[in-house]
Length: 329
Image (cartoon, rainbow, N blue to C red; front, top):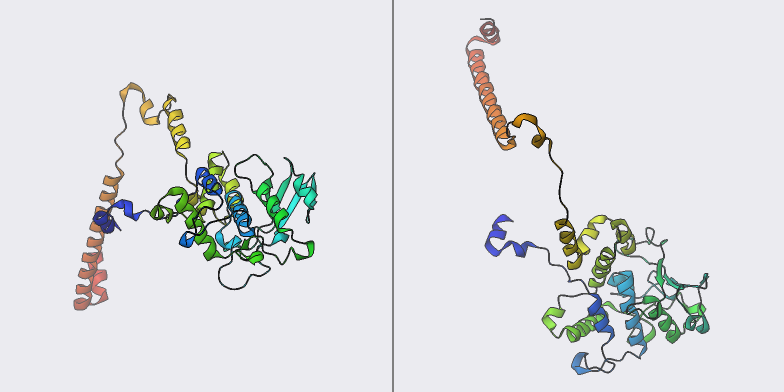
């Protein structure tokens, strides 16, 4: 690693990770004009389709839940009941849990009401036994730029899934409309197209991924003053090592630390600086002590080896009794 670092530069030893999403980028994605030609072959993108409304909802949910891509989209294979469905979505309306909200209830949502998502299986919890019993509470706020509960209410109204079909209907749909699963490949492609549009640079857009929403939420929660365990619980991480990787300290937070530190007048002292009459203890040099100890050990080893060789020579010529006689002498 040292040779590699010296030859190509230590900056190239830093792990390459997806850049965190930001509040500004997320809002710019949501504000892409309807009909804008951002798809392949300059095809227009439409927000008013089922796919468009579902994708808008998924963006809000990713930003406020920090789901991994595999938790909201299907890779290879068929969609199954282990994936999140409309049955994974509950509501707290007027203080009561509602599993099958009516259109009237959804239209009358207000602050103090919540959308509730029951997390499904994930790579860190493949059977949903660790986090499956920890609901995600999404507060309703129609005026917030990013609000998953508001987006989910609009999606519920559009999808109109019947109570008996909620368990078998994917929570987010693909291009084929309500009932079809959102596919990972389609989500990646659409995300890249949207990021290329809002950034204006395809090469830079490739540095972002769906996982950037997860890092965004961890970093935003940190900047908002949440503790490590709180962030770990919100993002459903199995260990605090992941937390250290994904949360990014904001420049305002870092700068605030230094501004506050500059205003502190230190008065602490070590014991060595408090000795009276100007007396000073010898300088403690652990490197020298270690070197002396190693040198002494090597000398002792050499002496022991020399003594062993001498004993062997005596044994060969005089036998064991000769060694005893030599020690007595």
